[in-house]
Image 1 (cartoon, helix red, strand yellow):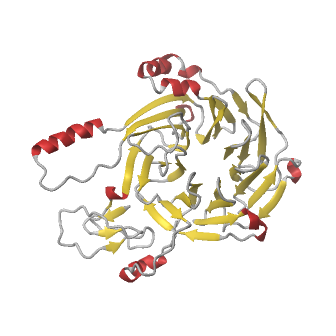
Image 2 (tube, helix red, strand yellow; image 1 turned 30 degrees about the horizontal axis):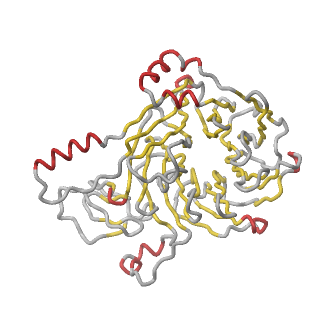
Image 3 (cartoon, rainbow, N blue to C red; image 1 turned 180 degrees about the horizontal axis):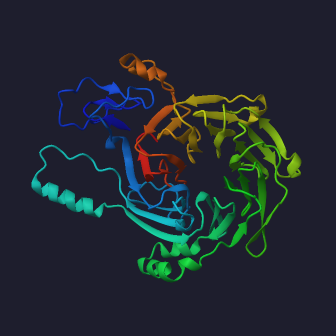
Amino acid sequence: MAARKGRRRTCETGEPMEAESGDTSSEGPAQVYLPGRGPPLREGEELVMDEEAYVLYHRAQTGAPCLSFDIVRDHLGDNRTELPLTLYLCAGTQAESAQSNRLMMLLMHNLHGTKPPPSEGSDEEEEEEDEEDEEERKPQLELAMVPHYGGINRVRVSWLGEEPVAGVWSEKGQVEVFALRRLLQVVEEPQALAAFLRDEQAQMKPIFSFAGHMGEGFALDWSPRVTGRLLTGDCQKNIHLWTPADGGSWHVDQRPFVGHTRSVEDLQWSPTENTVFASCSADASIRIWDIRAAPSKACMLTTATAHDGDVNVISWSRREPFLLSGGDDGALKIWDLRQFKSGSPVATFKQHVAPVTSVEWHPQDSGVFAASGADHQITQWDLAVERDPEAGDVEADPGLADLPQQLLFVHQGETELKELHWHPQCPGLLVSTALSGFTIFRTISV
């Protein structure tokens, strides 16, 4: 949500913006700012955030940027909405040199909501109280890091019983599994963390590694139904199935799943069937597979031209038979798996004006999803929303007529957005990673 400096603007959903300007002579009637659609910023104008559009908003940086991360489910309870919030992330860096990379556990805590605007006529005593309150409300970030040779392309976390692990795809062409229990322990204890960084971190190695992909990749997904079952896909078009073995090891089937003709970009296990998964590729297709068949015959359904170009990301709804996809064409498409053979999506949305880099369904609300793009936008959507013909918004500003009715919110201010995730235990909380760092926020819309 943003406004142009020097003018009063409204966002894509029609919410009023607060302008920041020392010169009010140029202020006119409220207008709608449409990312990628409206006029470019003029000299002296800049976009500023309207904090009233957010329930919570924080940013964090970790040195080198992170291309991928995952949220670590914790034991603090589900459906947490009471502030301040605490959350755990596992992330991997993309540093300038291979030896400078790290696998990191992040503990973010004391995350308060956005501060209400000061009331008119507040006195000095109230201002001093506000300063003290602001000190107490400062967010906190703790980091436990493990050296990792090579940039980390993707990180996905799973629990093997009581043991948390991270699957890590790296640019050196290997997929590794790291145990996370020690990182989770020390990130909560400052003294233990200092000792760990001094004495232990350099000795931490993966508990398992697979180099059979013959090149790097990005696609990786743990099964939500079968503990320890893993899929990995590479830029050489191959997908391999990992099956847990005794002694904390894995058997990786050397026979790749055959079907895609270019890089496998993303993988998603079915949330309802143990043996079914979906894949998307730079060959523009989306495929549905069943691992009960031989790898050469496991592809059961294919949509050959799902997007105009690379299909970058997919997300399988946990609550409906829907698959969400995002591509280089900037389109977001929803596929009803009961009609997948038709080759036609049940819905297509176009708001992003550059490749879509991440998509994910809301874990609790079956009609809500979020997406990020290389156009520096995060969008939130709700399939249940329809424009009220009596509201008069379109008549007030015809620009709104070009917006998809289901578009709830557009978040900006990040640079080169790469990945986003809803927090599974904190409803409505979104976390994203970008070149500009991490952002944690919840909007008034979700």
